[in-house]
Image 1: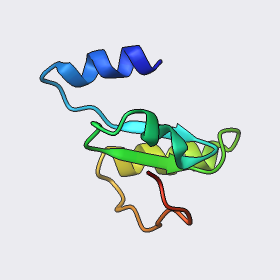
Image 2 (image 1 turned 135 degrees about the horizontal axis):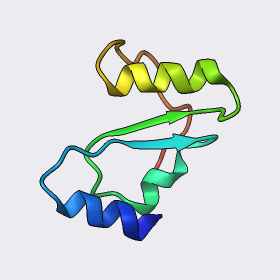
Image 3 (image 1 turned 90 degrees about the horizontal axis):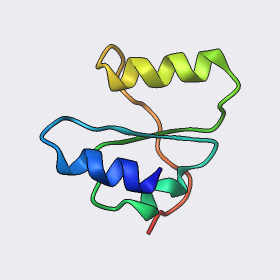
Length: 69
């Protein structure tokens, strides 16, 4: 997946990373410019909310409760 994402990031298309369950995936791809994380992947509500944020329908309102290096 990391290889795929890095390949997409080299293209001239917008890419938003979506991490499910925890926010640490971004530490593997620090060159990503846009990133969203949700703390659950089984909930349709969480996935719907993430899609709305990515599409600009809803503004993200949370912050990760951890520091990501």
